[in-house]
Length: 329
Ligand SMILES: Cc1ncc(C[n+]2csc(CCOP(=O)(O)OP(=O)(O)O)c2C)c(N)n1
Ligand SMILES: [Mg+2]
Image (cartoon, rainbow, N blue to C red; front, side, top):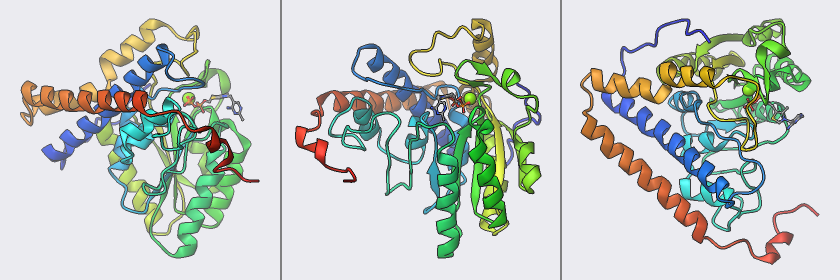
């Protein structure tokens, strides 16, 4: 994975850097804890962790304003935390408890928050893409200048419905930022094995949609590109594609034998490109924070995550009557 441009550093305040550090660390620690609870049998079903990809959603959320919407796939815990949903409610949903965002009836892939404009959580690959364009259509129809961040993976980028959506979104100038989280694998299939045209954002050109490739291991690079994308959409110029080159450190889901890549490949990425370490060293070398300051933040995050696990364990399972609520009949 090539970082084309060096990460931009100018015009970033100490507060912003600390904020990104905190937000990415929350996602990382939360996901590590979810992995532990899964191992203990407290989380059932599917569970897809976002570890390694934190800079993508944190960089883009830094460009969002009130009323903007987001929708994504099953790899969704990071997106929820980054848009301000509570760790307690997310963790309790993972454990299938009443205190969860879907009252314990949705689980990892099916959580929503009307308040934070988070529209899921979708288990069918690429199903969220036309839905994202629909959300953007609503904003256009209502005359707001809000945008919808529609996230999907490199594997999803080979789904036909993505291209039907591109056509309609461009035809109607919909304010949708298509975010391709290119983590280089779709389950066990690498991009190189699944496509001859590995530059995924360029496919938008066939529909007249502007786009670019972004270094997804740099939160600052993501934010900078995100600002361009969002400005384009808010100005009524139609959709924009960001192909964010990222990497997931863990398996596709908790039940992934990981036979399709080497340990060395993962290790190299962790050592050389980790997004959290990147910001950490920027904070230290720029004298924006001391080791002590960062330790205090680490502890603060650890406390939030541990509290969410406690909340998730203590929250009761949904009552039997809940089987008959929140359903269409
Ligand atoms: C329509 C459909 N086909 C197949 C699957 C099984 N499946 C689940 S995730 C996945 C891979 C998707 O990879 P990608 O879009 O790159 O997202 P990532 O998991 O890397 O975040 C597949 C094939 C599915 N859920 N839905
Ligand atoms: Mg992928």
